[in-house]
Length: 424
Image 1 (cartoon, rainbow, N blue to C red):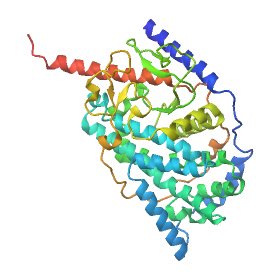
Image 2: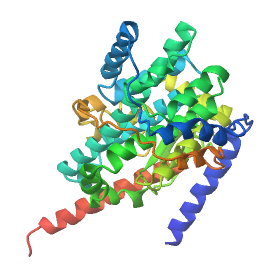
Image 3: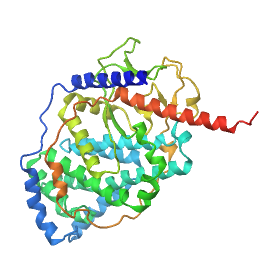
Image 4: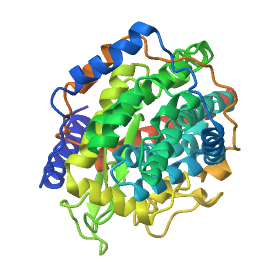
């Protein structure tokens, strides 16, 4: 126990020191003064009228545009890899759309979580049925958010091209009445923080209504022992690989502790690889929103983090395999997890992390229930503040979490092996 406490304290201490290094300098990132009061005024009339985003009238030109965006959204919504790429292309075209980059990075994590279900360790802990069910939930969340958000981003692109707002078409895509005032304000002021927070609030309520509170998921997935068993391992992590912030790579020693090592093998405690946060409770919508805001502030308040995230995103394509960001430890090659990787230096076998295309077939989203999630204005409490986290480096904590997952899988495998042995 003492060794575990010491190791945990060392990990937290290293994370704090590296976070301080990457947090300097700091950019100004804050919500506009009075934004919550403004939004309350804009939305109150809609709430009182009971409007739930009924489709706007479409003339021939508008109908053609809506059909085009719907077709493009459906094509990009094929799987996690195509969605993730679409978000990045939108951010590259319009870098004022901060949410598009945040969505790209979080979507990468969604893909890694999906392929973990077919990787080295979770198949030893969960049945195929449990893993398929968890994949279905992850895929539904990923696809629902894209289906709702991508048309909004495209309407902004169309507005830029036309030189006039096209946001009156938002209801044609089933977008909540909550979003139009924020888009119209953004169109005039180009201030990204309020729009980004609005999109975070909106998308989390989209999945709250259609996944988290859906009995099909609430009872069979979120309430299952398989899902609850993941929380003690702190696997609800979102990590952001940072390229260009140093030359270190991550190595795991036999003790399970993580340390940064320079390419020549020498110690390097100044460099880090991963930034991010840990979500404690997926089932709490307010916590998910606060979590999204914290990730956003981490990215755009700290220039080194933003630069590192972009350096990684622009140079490393997303496949769904954790080998994308950690080739020293993971391999995407089937069967290669059975051999020691020559480059990891500790004679430990590589961990199998498949590409999404090798892990799961595409799964169409299917029909989605209608209706606007906006029923009151309590959600505007999320516009009161926007704070960047103090400790956000996840290099060592992520490695330690992967070690805990490995230990749990091997322990269960050992128990099963022992139980299967015939009695003497």
